[in-house]
Picture: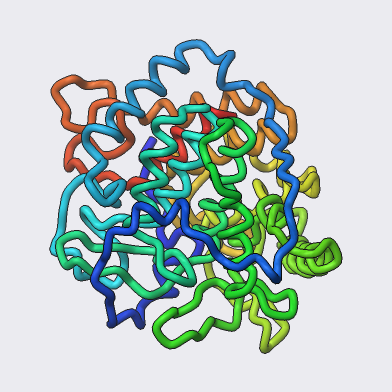
Length: 390
């Protein structure tokens, strides 16, 4: 089985081609105690539903998880965060490569530490996240240590992962956050990333402009429900975004989802390909809101069982890329936990773990990548880690 990262996760590879400017990074590790005006926000009562804890019952899970966590800590983590790739590059491509770091990775690791109830890991990850990515109005999506370049653009899906990690930490790691960080950062996010119930993909902080569309896998309904805003505003936002997400359903024959919705055209943007990671994340977000289509779950179960969950499809379900992603099976395990299907969880984890490297002679030992070329993507490894906590 050939397992590779699905190309163009949630549209990031296509959204930031215009990035030419940068800001020098400045350490601000004391930001955790900084005060911000909360005049336009309301207190939020954080209620995080623990998913079915199937990972704790899984044979061999603790050993495989520990090997992966050790690999990430020792081989994939630097002073600024988690490397995008194991092998370094010149770090000057349109998309992040090499030892560049992404707020995507920071958010996933925050969630992992919070759900694991590892206060030490959480605090360390949070301090690095703030120092590396935080700007006055948003989190940068990308930083290049080699170029000392912080990109002045965020990705709403990554900001929401960070906010979700903070919320889960407040619930499961008492005292881990002395300030109400969900209120602080959730309020900031709502002010900059939502306008008239329209959640957007990204914002350029240098020019204070946003795009005019939303990628469906960015619509994290659960985290939107945690934003510290008035009840009526929250309901209007979630109703609007849930409609965009649910109406992006492609149909029972191929029960995945459209890629992107354009607010100006009031239509879904035509896409020739459906990225498996994007659609699975959309299904995960729907499952957290108990809005999952039974046809989607049936499709996932069938293809997890057969080991035929491929990276890219046409809009009618024709396979366009027979490579597979460890992350795809990890997300399937999360979906299984949300819908209460332990058999599907275990089968998806079997598929995921089949590509974990168990070779003491390999520098990638314990991780997910290509042991022949040492090619490796942080997303696969962090999704795999997170799946153990479901």
